[in-house]
Image (cartoon, rainbow, N blue to C red; front, side):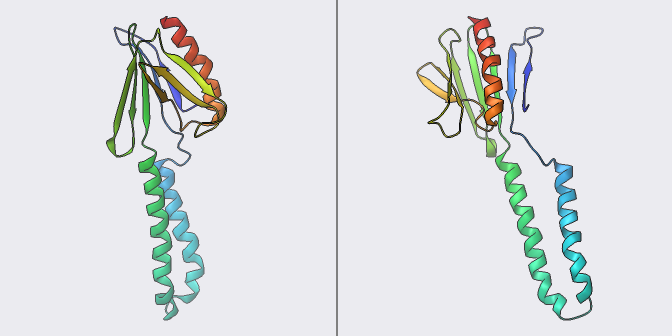
Length: 162
């Protein structure tokens, strides 16, 4: 699961830390680019030394460069981290988005309502927290099953604060 509960210890509050699932780690990224280059170069071995190579080379560079740019953008866009901090008198959600964008939300945990919207949201089983006059999403990058699994755990933590 791409979330973890960090328990309270030595004066630090309990915290829920969420992040998007990354199926291709950085080391895998390098390996994928290397394998792509190798697989594209195999058929090009037959045209080494002929003028045809110079006609195919720009397309090879364009293909590998396009994959590189697309995967790099995917990594930048997925640099999302959400931290839900459980203080005795305040519930704080901090979302660190792509490009360093930070969003904060605070509410009194006694009045916070956790809602799972089975449909009608941007994703199935949309999970929201409502309090302090605002409703905020939680873990929109999680899969449908992960949000379903997170809901009872989160409700239990909220009930413990009340």
